[in-house]
Image (cartoon, rainbow, N blue to C red; front, top):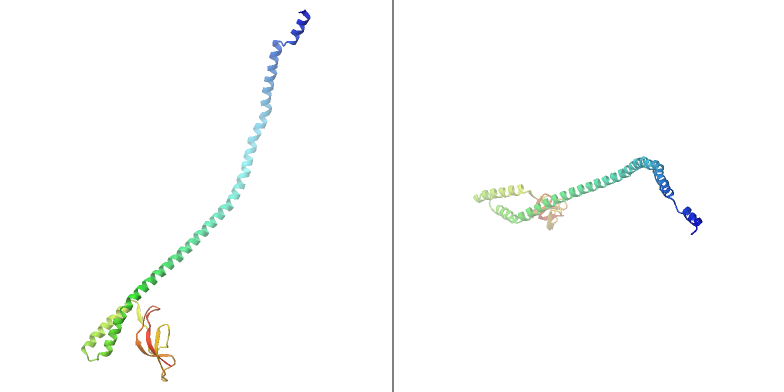
Length: 206
């Protein structure tokens, strides 16, 4: 080879000095970049608290109506439940009272024929008969027991006829009494409060 070609080749090949220069420029560029980006990173934290501070009042304002509506709904449920329980309590108490009255009435009905027998015995016993005083004492005890149990006689003779308490089996014309008046009672009637245990069997005039 000639010397000229050797010289050309030596010029084209990079020298160690040029190889070292390239990385130095790259290092400089890498160091400059962080300095330029630093202000941007500092601005972000300053914006975030402002955004949070603006969102928090809005979130609270949205939650307050929801909480009020929920509280009103729960209060309404409570009042409804309280009213239902009060109605249930009253209904149960009334049912208990009705059951007690029904049972008591059915039991007392079984003793009414005894009253009828004592009444007939008194009617057929003369006033001077020694047995009459004993019958009167028994009848008095019987009537007191009925009164203590809440049982009362239904008034009939001389009263206007009332289908709620009287059972008319005979009818007569009598100008001496008013219209639709009970003139005779064949069987006494009894009641507990307003409930009839047994209707009075009566004769009605006019």
